[in-house]
Image 1: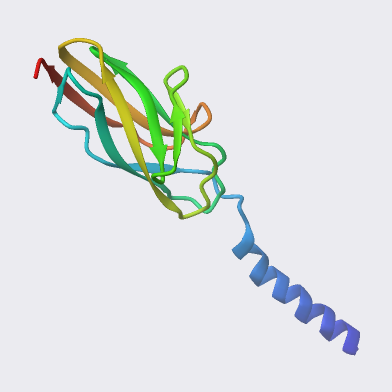
Image 2 (image 1 turned 180 degrees about the vertical axis):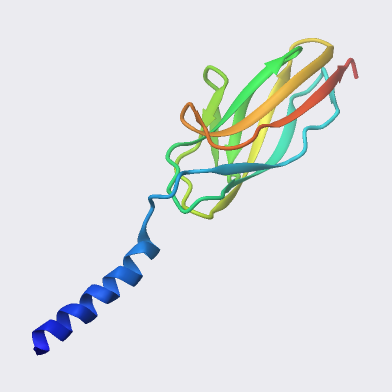
Length: 143
């Protein structure tokens, strides 16, 4: 009888505690920040962002996909002020992001000429999009 009570208590404990350690929720993330409305064609454009894992899942690798039409091209990003990573095929990835964790990311875009660029930055896990894009139009001016 004592063994039955012990098994019930242990089983109950794991039934309550085990879900707290689960990482089975679907990954999701948000980008916080603003796309500036203007940039100079003479220097790279820096966009400060917050990248927030809004799920309880580990996101690895955590990435930002950039879709740009117009006179800007994605160059690199700096994750947490430490890791500098180059964009490849419109994507930059910076390691893993734990559940409910938020980090800072600086995205750098290089002007190729003057005109208006439409920019869309989307949080992703590799190629899989995890949230809504941050969008804006940027007027690239001569000075």
